[in-house]
Image 1 (tube, rainbow, N blue to C red):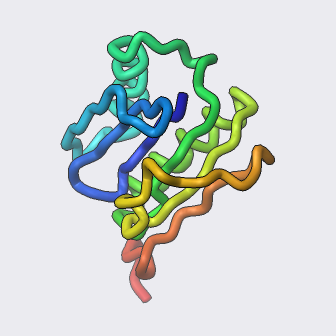
Image 2: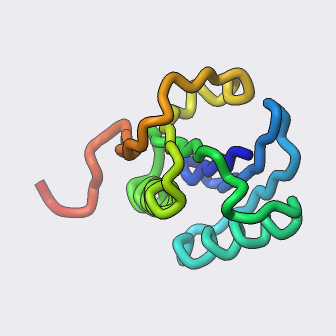
Length: 126
């Protein structure tokens, strides 16, 4: 079972994928408080998909481009879950979403996903 996390767009999406098919998907909009909401939504997805967290074999997270804070939250959760569960995590860019279900995974080595913002964050003055 694969957990897919996309926080790069206004419509946040999490999905469970099995045998290259999406078996359960939740799309939600949340502009503030995404960290708390994303974890609750993942819990809801697992329950509705009748899946235990230990059944996850890998995690895919959209690494960008996208909103600075949203990407950090989604990627932090993906990396933390992967590390805790000792499963691989993979990062894809938004323009690779069309091929999501046909992705080939090259490694089972546990690594971390780094965000790709697409532009410099505008959180301070230059």
